[in-house]
Length: 292
Image (cartoon, rainbow, N blue to C red; front, side):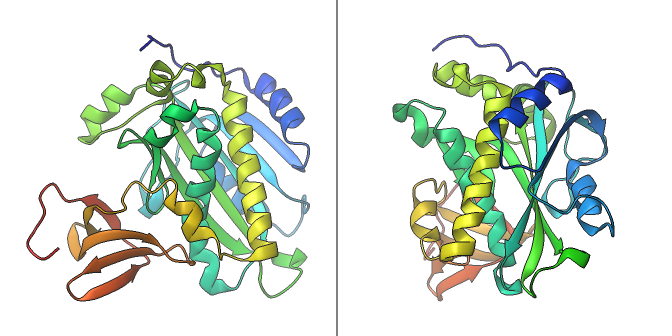
């Protein structure tokens, strides 16, 4: 194991130059010192009656004053300790399939970051449903997915704009673990275990994930969601484990995690049968209960 330093975040102008070169298909790329929320900014742009219409877009910020995670949680961040950005994409899906974008975004991001690691350590980077990225079972990154109608530029009834945002911990894992009272990982820990990861720049992480989102959404538009369960199985952090599905601290379901279906719903099996879970927080049970 080697001692590593946190990944360096270039100045916004340098990030912009590197990302523009790496993402030629993106119609707008911006990186700023600070903003309230990159997801909220892109959502406002998507809903505006005027302004740029051609997508995809990317917006990143060194600091978010009102960054959001899933379920309305705030995103703790400080300059240099987190890599945060959002992308806006045109998607063509029926409303019933829009929730699938959340696990799909996590899956694509996990696959993209695994490509930056040595083959022997890739299995330590996994995905916890619906879309948290984990390093050695500790949270490395969180993703927020939102969708809105495409407004005046809507091309068909199933045309939406999907806003995919991610926050990756670069440093501060120990402090966050203490303040949040749960296991948190950061990229510096990944680099300490895998020298290949140390060759990646901040722009590499951003561009790999953004391109993976772009490619995955294009594949879904062209070919549907048929292969989602097989892809997900390669990064699944929960399969075979005894879990609780929670809502506001209340247990909704308990059983054994069995992957996902084509809609990205979590499959859970217990004595009452197999259940497809659409919403809820998942916790791994420390002890196996009878009949679970």
